[in-house]
Amino acid sequence: MEAALSVIRAKGYTATRVEDVCEAADLTKGSFFHHFKSKEELAVAAADYWSQTTDALFAAAPYHAPSDPLERVLAYVDFRKEILAGEVPEFTCLVGTMVQEVYETVPAIRDACDRSISGHAAEVEKDIAAAKALYAPDATWTPESLALHTQAVIQGSFILAKARMGAEVAAQSLDHLRAYVEMLFAQPRKGD
Image (tube, rainbow, N blue to C red; front, side, top):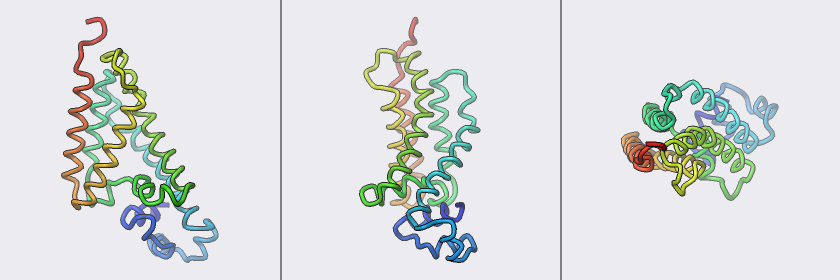
């Protein structure tokens, strides 16, 4: 799975060949086909593995520490910026990469990618909902819509990082996201 993540993040799903994954994993093609019927089946498994791996990373991340839910949301954005390290394939999102390529042509991969992105957004949504209840209870936007928007900005920042071959533009996008979130909540607290 680690080899699949590495190769697909670097080359994209379409350009990745079974031979590339086998070479990176130091396996034979026969071994590959013992575990997976096709490259598509590998991609679905890779998306699920990505979700498990990133779920663990984000569950242990320091942005959970603040007691205030708005501070947790802002710390989440800061954390996303902090992990923009290394070469572009090392910090970009596997499922974002794959879904951009196959959203219409390979529904099984699209659905696996959606589960991953939407599942992550649902976790972020919990803190957004708590912050909204405290700071913006009458706002017309929903916690779900803001959680999905954070993911849209993050995925878009990865596209820009790929286009510009570096993390700086992604970091700037995340700075704008942070400022946007701060503006949404720039209201007196409930009861103040």
